[in-house]
Image (tube, rainbow, N blue to C red; front, side, top):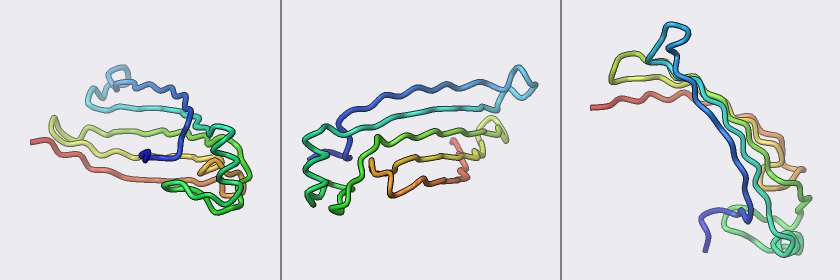
Length: 111
C-alpha cells in the first residue's frame, strides 16, 4: 500500500524572507511539482482499477501539475498568518477532472 497514487515526481521551490522589503518576519514562497504514473498503473486505472485515492474507470491520463504560492505575515515573533493558493492541473492525473484552484488561510502559533 502506498500513501498516494504517484509513481514519479519532480519538484522545485523557494522561500524569500521579507528583510529586503522591511518585514523580516514575513515570508513569500513558490513551489511547483509534476506527478506521474507508470504506464502499467495507467493501464490498470483505465481498465477500472482503483488506487488508494484515484480511479473511476475513466482515466484520461496527463501528469498532475501543481503550483503553490503563499505569503506568511509575521504577526509577532511567535505567531504568523499565511495566505496560500494552489493551482492543480489534471488532478488525480486525469485531465477530465480539472483544473482546480484551492485557497487557504492558516494561523501558526508557537509556544
